[in-house]
Image (cartoon, rainbow, N blue to C red; front, side, top):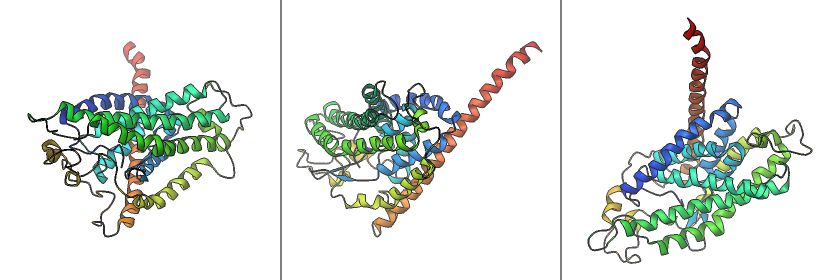
Length: 362
């Protein structure tokens, strides 16, 4: 599935740089997400993390024979802030790598840097730029969200393309043969950007803009969580009584889980995610699989539902459905545990600050 960089395609040195970028972002995200926890929006964050996990399971066919997928990063950034998106998408990506073999464990840092950091911040920046001072219920804001989603996923795709394309330039043997990803920049950038500028970006834009447009009608207070100072002319004091947005969100997640096997219908695979034995060596001028790629590609052997399956492809639809349910449960539970831990730590710090003056005077 596009943009999930597998192990072996990036050198260990490159993977280390990915963690250098991602780890500080995670640390800041955990601190900044306290506002979401205090505002009792943990269920919303958990549902959005599950949505991110699910949309990344949907393969979308691309005209060149590959596939791609949406991320759901910008919609989280718009609703709860970009730091909440960092946390939610990182959790989804982490379990995809550990349990489902989707994306590498060594490459997890750069997968998060691309999809959980760059995508939501670029998407949110474009959203804020286009939305300007418009009211929360203005059509301009839904359009801004769609444009932000489109821009965010394409920024992540471009970053992944550059990371792939630099490998043969930076890491090769004495004969010039690549040690890791064999694709050069003139191959990676067109391949990745074709998929995301034409198809995946549109899907991300529709998802992001659609959610905001729905909430403009059904739950303006939820939109206000991350837009405290923005006017909303004609805002209703309460959410829709007929369909409560959280119930709608849970229903949407359930429907998406049931529909995930549709991703199996997409022919081909994502660019840059071939197993070493599936590489077209002749196409890349190779006589053998790059040694580093061959060495590190099987780094993680403990994915219980490798490839979103546990039936050795005997019943792929069942495998996809079970994987979706397991993924939703684990990602949602992880978000709850992380946010509860953040709340507990914040409470302990607040208590220590309150008692400190009295203790000092005793």
